[in-house]
Length: 261
Ligand code: ADP
Image 1: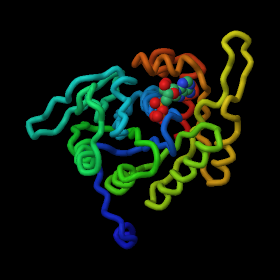
Image 2: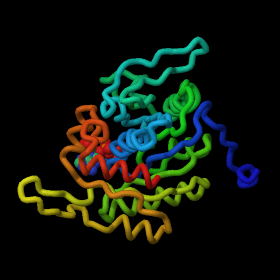
Image 3: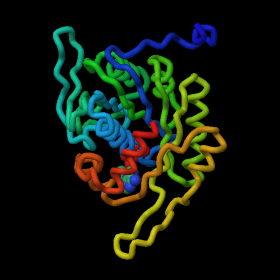
Image 4: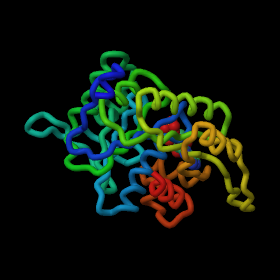
């Protein structure tokens, strides 16, 4: 009723999904997908009885297939719904499963919107406690459509500690507030780099930028993920650090994030 009064369309839940968590970023390349993938795996590791799914809504640049080491076309149910592809116990759906690997995603406008509708409405997730959504970077039409068409438990915004990324993250937070999506907090990614040779810690992009932005927005700083070569390598290999190196400090930073969310 409140939504109708504010002129927003009525949101309709995704069948079988209890809570939707968005992982967003103001700009690209800050580690949003890496965070989404490891967060989904960490939620499951922390709460083994819960079912967690991962929706790659980064329609222009899907990275979940590679990071989760999945490829192929989804099978269809009798009523033409798409079955997710599963790895490490997490069912996943991505634009990357629907288009050819080599085909550039030059889709615009209507085509993206109809694909998005498929990803939101025509996936047979079964029963999920959490659906983690890897959002496209920024604050465009796709982001608005997602926030307005499904009920969302909250959004997590990934940023580096650097000024320019922080500015964009702030804009992202404001977009969510405008459409009444709770901002759960910020994740500071690529904060400290520890030299593998001497152990010295360097804050390459600065150290407390996200803390300051979180304070000024009045939201929590949910996590701090170090800049570590293992995070990059494991993502590229399709064996995210939370599953391939569960005892490492890097994995722990994601497990802590999952507890804070
Ligand atoms: P986005 O989704 O924001 O575009 P990605 O998650 O694709 O960003 O990350 C961009 C690149 O940075 C990838 O190569 C990824 O492996 C790497 N990366 C992300 N986070 C970290 C980190 N904490 N440490 C090292 N490399 C990282």
